[in-house]
Length: 367
Image 1 (cartoon, helix red, strand yellow):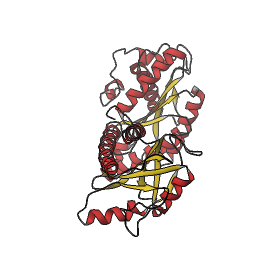
Image 2 (cartoon, rainbow, N blue to C red):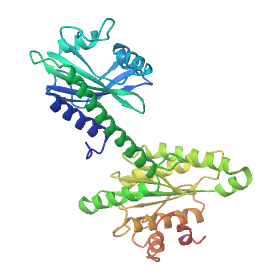
Image 3 (cartoon, rainbow, N blue to C red):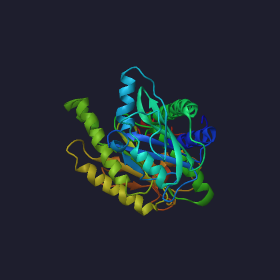
């Protein structure tokens, strides 16, 4: 389980391990979606019944049909008890559950799917029910006993540990690649995406485009209205960028830092990227804060020469943006639009040691 990289892989590894350890024919892991009041199946492994899928998209059940997750277990924990697994059979509730046990839905499911018994163990994270581990045996196989239930409890705890680690790693990755103010991707995410995209471009010629934007008038907003209002402008422009980028399949919208943003598009032709950038400029000009944006586009679909690295693509987009700002253009300037002798391309290539994107880029822009 330690090698699993995603929540889905972690859940699958845990389900496979539990099925093997308990001698079951089938296993599943489900999560309790508290906001929706549903128990959602993340993964099914083993001998699947008709209609079951390994990674179901929409298999979920009202948690009220399984109140042991939401009620019975919490009552036990509140009384000082520990999370514990239990066994159910297709013949009805096992003798150790006592009156009032919640098993009718599980019993019906066992019968419908031709299984003889199951053991259910709660998965507990941060002191509360997160979901459940479910392992079943076929009809006619030995029924799970109390020792199996205790073992299932241990396996659920191991699964919980793996899930918690995966969630921590996912959160760390999210924080590492996300701009905290706008919720867009950050510079690190852009670097990773561009390197991967340019490798594809070298292999099969996939078009890679970079749109770089600089918000006009942010300093004046900060100086006259305060940084809180300036932050609101950054957030609002980030939303506009996200909306416009959404028309380009798989595009990455990012804030590079300060008043600088970008879009990375991999696959769409240059014309589509320019249309999206044009729409971005028009929408930004209508914001009630700031003075629109200066926007530059660099794309491998244009006559811009070889692009051996993300650094050159950024230099080209930066030079195009600089020209847009100098000309107070109301739309994007596109590197290579004027052919092989394009002044934007000449400007970018005149400084082969120009700095990579970041705050120091302002030196390249002559500020």
